[in-house]
Length: 486
Ligand code: F6P
Image 1: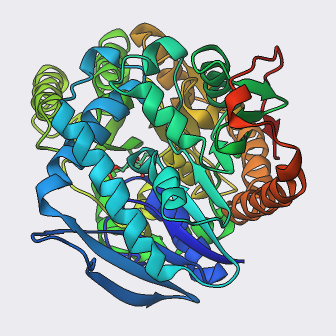
Image 2: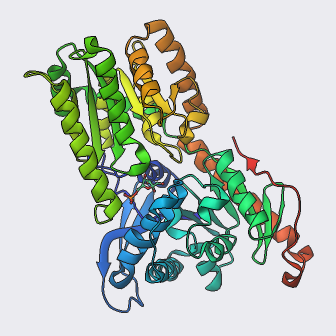
C-alpha cells in the first residue's frame, strides 16, 4: 500500500525543534519508517488562484514530507476560524466557546477542496489516503468528488463529544454526512466512537450495524484505535538527555527539592487554571511542602490570534504571578512558568527529572505527554503520574493517580500523595503503565489502522453489488457499537 498521510501540522523530524502537540510527534516515526508521503501545511500562505499548489518536498527517513502553502484568502477562516473556533471547542465539549461565521465555514471547505486537488499529485498505484484530525473532516468527500476511489481512512486525535454538543457547530449535518465518504473513521476511545455512531443513527437517521454506517457513500466503519508512542525510543531519549545543558541546569537548580512537571499547549482544554489552583491549595494546606517541591509548567503559546487563547494566556500568567507572590520566598519560586516550546530531546530529560508528572486536562483525545512522562522515567526510581480521568490516556494508564480536574481540593490532595508515595508502590504502578505502553506502541497503532483500512476496501468491493439504491436510505437499525482494534 502506498500511503499518503495528510495532516494540517507536520514535523520535519529535527529532535531539537519544538513540537506543537502530539499529532506531529506521533506521525513522524511512522512516516520515517513506513516510507509514506506526509502532506501538510507549510505554515505559509500564498496568494493567487492556486491552480498549481506549491509544495516543498523533502526526504523524511524512508518517507517524504510535502509541505503546501495554503491559500491566503482562506487560511484565517479555515485555521483560526472554523477549525479552531468552532470545531475545536465543540470537540472538547466547550459549546460556550463556539464562534463561527458563514465565511469561516466556506473557507474551511475551500481549504479542504484545495488540499484534495493538491493530493492528486501524490496519487500512485495501490495508493491509500489517511487523513488526520478535525481540520479535514470533509477532505474524503472532496477526494471522492474528484474521482478518487482508493481507500480513504480518517483518524480523529481529539475527543468526539455528545450529540447535543456537536449539534452546536454550524453545518454539522453537512459536515458529518461528508465524513461518511471515508471508508474507516478511527477514534481514540470507545466513548468517542459511540458518540459518533449515535449521531449517525439518531441525527442522520442512518443504518448503523456493528460499527458500520450505511450512507449514500456506501459503508463507513467506525472503530477505536488508541494512539501510542514508541516507549523504548523515548526511554533512550530520556537517558541521553541527562547531559543536555538545560536538563543539567534544572537538576542543579533544584538543590534536593522535588519537582512536579506540566507540559501543555496553552489551551483551555488543558485545565491549566485548575492545576495551578490545586498547587496553590496544596501549599496552603501543607505549608511544609513549600520549598520542598516546585512546579515546572511549560505552556507553549498556541493559536494566539484567537480571543479565547489570548484571554487564557493573560489569566494563567496572572494566576501564576499571584501564587508565586503568595507562597514564594526570597530564594524560592514555587512555579517556574515558561511560555515556549521544547524539542523532545530536552523534554524527555525534563520528564525524567520530575518526581511527579501532572497531566490534568478537562478534556483530551489521548494526551501523549502522559505516555511520554511514563516512558521517560528511571525504572529503579520512577516518578508518579497524576492524570485526569478525562484524558483518553486514562483508559490505559489506570494505575496512574487518576483525578477529576474540576475538583481542585481532590487534585491538591492527590499531588501531595504522589510526592510521598513509597518506592515499591511507585514501581508497581509504573511497571503496569509501561506494560500497557509496550503493548500499544505507535507502530502497532499504525499497523492496526492500515490493516483495518485494507479490510474495509475488501468489504466494499465484495459488498458493493448488493448495496441498496440510495433512494432507499436512510433506514434505521437498533444496533450501534464500534469495532475495537487492540
Ligand atoms: O489533536 C490535537 C492536535 O491536532 C494535536 O496535534 C495538538 O494537540 C494540536 O491539535 C495541534 O494544534 P495546532 O496545530 O493548532 O498547534
